[in-house]
Length: 331
Image 1: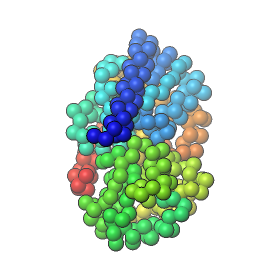
Image 2: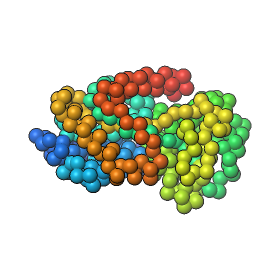
Image 3: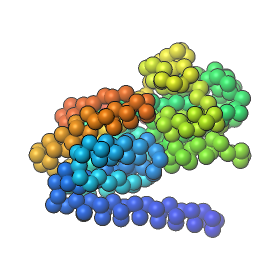
Image 4: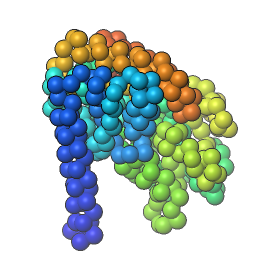
């Protein structure tokens, strides 16, 4: 293995080890304390991504609403969130920790064949829906989504597409688009990235081999769209997103491209009914704050709150749907 690759691999392992150590220390600091006194929110991804954004917006809402005395966010990136999921599974009975989850994690569980699943957590709440966009650099020859599809269908290998984890929602959206556009899924040149920051760097790079089309949650691209460095070709949402001049997949005649990236919170397995009730109440108070309402509007989310057993049933159904979709798409 080349020395550069060895160094990069060691660096990734070191970051992961430090994240796990920080998480363990944070979890221990909450032992014996009520969630109102000290709460840890796990973002199972690197800083700057969608899960991290949800965790930090939640942290801010809890602080400004005086809901929890001390709220800390711990990032545990890797493997479509399943590294964070495995860490959470080791905190049986710990009622002062919650983890952000969503569609990507269900794809990661399915792809990896993980022995740990959402059934090894205590579902607390689904919070909101976050929508995918297809974006290109400002200087891209693709001025419209149809421009992109025509070039893609003519030569899929010449149009590499970038997104998040392999098997995650970005990858599934790419495969859905391919099916709908008549592009053989197996010919899609998809490049997985560790997060939105890495993806945007790849999109804006002029180096050979970088991607020319990106798929991610809108907020991963928002600043670069606002500054004119990226252009949105389409949104995967039931309606156009406020302030974004880009058509929906339904408008483009591709209603079957319909994956929504919901966001939610789960706690460790084995917590008491009282602990679960307390965490649910904390979340109910969080989403009632002005801070959270502003976050929903700013990030162009759509509220979709369900709690407890309703969320638990949703997770079972959603995991089945994602498993079937991945199989159908051949991912």
